[in-house]
Image (tube, rainbow, N blue to C red):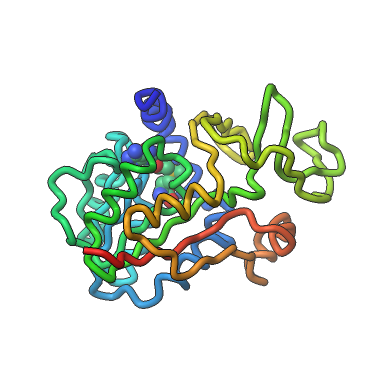
Length: 267
Ligand SMILES: C[S@@+](CC[C@H](N)C(=O)[O-])C[C@H]1O[C@@H](n2cnc3c(N)ncnc32)[C@H](O)[C@@H]1O
């Protein structure tokens, strides 16, 4: 299974890079990144590990804010794309092709900050990843961890939507009409799910695998590894974001994502 998860990301690397680099990842642009950077505060001069950095879009933004950034990802193609950008515009970022659940070669208590941005749902071995995040953080260092909001995220079973936004014209993907409300009829079901990235604005469609978990699961795993949640944000679009993507209005009513700040209190 781990191999299949990885193979999907390997196959999707170029399509993912096109999605992110051309501003088509509207949730990132309109509310996830603004909220993440507000939570991070001043990172100038801090050592920062960007776990599961993908093709490095956010690693580059973090480096431009003055952090000394290392990025890791288990997809060799993602890391290849990130290194290519680093050679075109050097920002002093180091990239390594590593699995987040085994950060071999990275010493204990190395980083002031670890970021895991819109990625915790993608980790199959969440226990192993959290153990590693805690290990490489300095005491009193913190992690910023984000993901789709477990209470409201879209979920499908046997081809039927069991959670997520319900639109006026549910059957028509090209003209769905107004978003009416979020339904949730399956919150406690956990496990693997597939995402078909088939939005019309994408140049190439692709498929990835993620893991559905509850809020209890996430807060529990952090606590078991000495990472205590000190802050939590459910991002909302700003006025500028609403002007750029009017469809994000629905996230003034119900959040799409959640961001945890977790401080290492042991060790
Ligand atoms: C949704 S993308 C997010 C990338 C990046 N954090 C961003 O915000 O642009 C998920 C990334 O997680 C990586 N990934 C998933 N599981 C991983 C693991 N166990 N170890 C390292 N990388 C992993 C994938 O290869 C992919 O690049």
